[in-house]
Length: 114
Image (cartoon, rainbow, N blue to C red):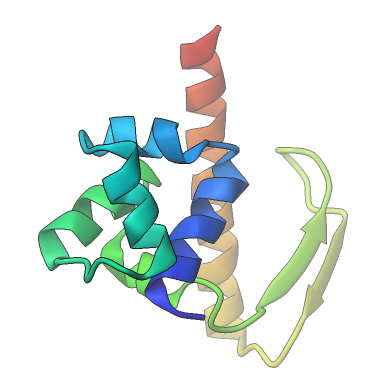
């Protein structure tokens, strides 16, 4: 998965339109669309802005989608089904912590929207 695909996929996971993402980055919708299409080479400073918009780091953004570590289903407080795919205990722990942080950010976003 290339960088533009990762950015598009993460935006879609958030349920944001390209226009909403462009607004968050203070750029034109067409300029942002060019990033997702892979037309524009993205500088590190822009990657930092994109990662911040997703509440993640550049490292997480660049590694997003590189390997499937876990599958879970449940509510925000419990994991009821967990399957690992070629994961060490250490990497699984890190992935679980990342997902818990994402859930915390989602809860904060929901409170903000209310």
